[in-house]
Image (cartoon, rainbow, N blue to C red; front, top):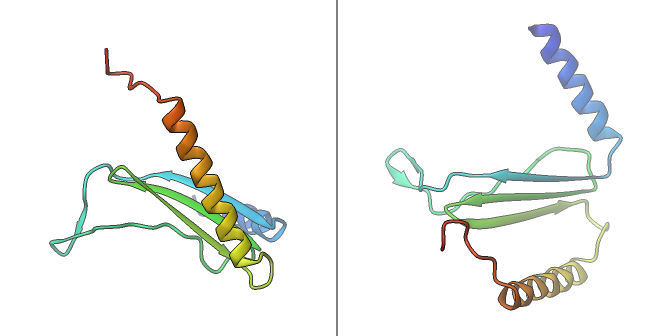
Length: 107
C-alpha cells in the first residue's frame, strides 16, 4: 500500500510542477454541517502551496456555488479578471432567464 501512495504522490507532484493552471470542481454537502456544535454558514475549497500560476476551485455547499481563484502576483490584472467574471456571470444569468431548465421532478 505504501508503494501505491508514494507512486501517486510522485505522479501528482510531477503533474503539478508541469502545469500552469488547475481547475477543480467538487459537489459539497446539500445540508448544513456543523463544527463543535456551531453551524457552518459557508464553505470554500482551495489548493494552497501549489506551484501553479492559476487555480480555479468550484464548490457547492447547501445549494450555493462558491468560486475561488488563486494566482501568482502579476499573472493576470485583477481588475480585468473581475470585470470578465462579472460579464460572464451576467451572460449566464441572462441565458438562464431566457432558457429556464425544467426540473426533472416537475411535471
